[in-house]
Length: 428
Image (tube, rainbow, N blue to C red; front, side):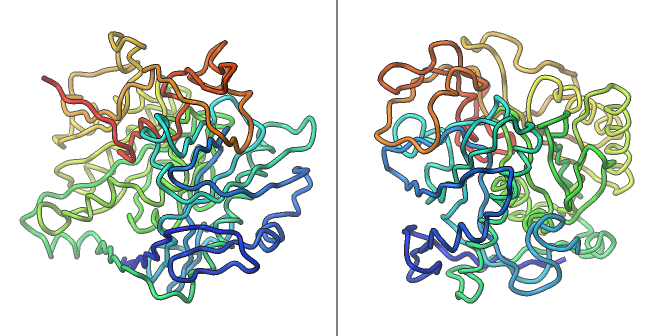
């Protein structure tokens, strides 16, 4: 499967009379965008704002971040199962408004939404302080059930990103990147002397408000399966969860998974990147056993030499991570894990809730319990009041001057378990 991503570099976002891209500037018509996303009676209002890198602006609580992409050639369309029909994606040509992002915010859905600061200390921890953000603040009707609230806001974000991306449909990209994965037997024939490597992609699926979707299906309902890496780049996987902001994979992260991109970078040179095994993170032990058994079976069936395994979330999913590691290693396949740590504010506690001696190659995204001070911002898009109650906050986190003292958990993407951040650690 071959996919061309055409990157259109967006240097600025401004409001305008019509929605268009001109000379690297994305102009947004508020009315056109509202017309595209409105109509859900579960929401009483949708407000649109813009947050740019370097501004004294705080966005909170953040639900999702989505990169605008549009399919310009090939089968299917972006976000299959939600926006487009359930056709197989991942081939043809897709244009990307690189440097722009849609951010959904508003009244808190659960308790694990996050914060994006466009400047100051917090900006150093989130990748989304570097994007030009179109923010949609959604207000739900009274007494709306949490799962319905999440669904309504999720669809607003997907519709907004799809509408905005259309502005790039007929724009000549500034850069084109080509990604290709051959069918397994063809790939083995082409690179017979290279080690076969796959990516085991653990998706957050631990109950209500812990949802990840694959072609529109809640991944709780799947068994581990194999997909082309390029399908992920075309929106086959998207976020619907409210786990801790620091290690949640927003939809933007799925579209731009750096593990997939880095594996492609060395594909055909150092190893043969054969594909992605997607698996879920379960609540019950029997389900954990089933999924990890299937994951290990697929790795063996593909004749893999090594896998990279990434996690989403912490605590309970650590067991899924270790089961996958232990069972795949037992089949003679090398493993590298990517996770983050909850090692206490002093960093001295056990980093993971589960462990196994087979997990001897681990990459960390940082300690989410580290306490940081976020300075007050001149502008707040959304609401400051959840600062004391979101995961990582505590009574008194929100200070009278508008600054916030909290654990790193509160910052969106700070300890990304796919490496979409700056933090890591070195063992001395």
